[in-house]
Image (cartoon, rainbow, N blue to C red):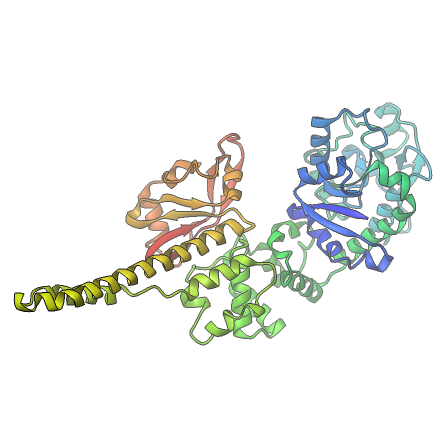
Length: 505
């Protein structure tokens, strides 16, 4: 079975599934692909995967672009345990009424299986929970009068209109107030199966749904120590680049002070010191391992400190340990590129200047020695020229390593030249260009102020960044070229290479 999981922050829930922790318990052979939401839909439509987990709104948007609802009636979509049924926000208050029920189109259907799974999960602590009844899709007013509070259905076969909204803006507030348990499973996701898979492998759905339920039960039951250990275990793997702590606010908003700090540390960076101490005491990290982890998360956008890489992360005592690539996380070539960059030692300018001074001194010798010295001068000039050539070669290599670092990063990165306070856009990766709607070369050489949503003066940038040394700008809002209403927020830190200061955003 092939599953495509969308690369959205909320898909954190399925990182555990990606590790097959729960699928293996059900003896399921599962291959997990990780793509963006749109690509996940395309893979599913072309039947390159059997199942896709993606935002429900993205699925409907992509489906409406390419196909009408009646072209592929066998193309089956049902709500996953993250989004099982469509609740009428006006009737949430009647959730525990004797007459309340969830409507399904038919018995012994996939919709019924999902509805029973989520009701069991949500109301397991209660003696009673809403019934499930087979219902024809009558006018909404009649269903409401009969006590129907929601649908569990295939949205392609049974489109929703009127008060039965699927858009998260319509129901999220009411769900949070009236039914806190359901807010855990927000935002709205769907699990979509290909028609071919449903027709040939229907017997595999029961253990698959059971595996998803186990995953949700595990995540929703994590306590203080367990959640920290679980996050740490993910952090040591390839997944941490896609981890977003803000999404966890929907899950663990009522934990103790330490974990509130954990949830809010992107908004308030002052918590980081305490978290680092806690992390060190929990894992008993050696100094070089801790530095590697810092290095690992810096370029995934989850760790924000003044970028004094050479001074802070690579001390003389740890240089050899850090340069041992066996100690590094696997499949992160950009860390290797950075270490190569750090290890390069360009020829010091003072040595080159000394050679030039010596040459000038020798040129002032008496003419009688001119011929004799000419050969030596020529040899020295050749040697100096070779040294300068080798230095330039090393600089090119260093520059290439740094640009490789930019291109391989999973986060949008922008490099700004702050020399002479000009703040010129020096380079950026494709992720950044895509985020704000420009081509990969269109912004090169343009002033950074050109893409700021709220205009700043150069003096404000200088005061915020250069004069404050190790401090950062707060998140700066950039304007999107095509969609003015979309904001792209990036953090900032100073870096230095080739003897110049740059702003890495």
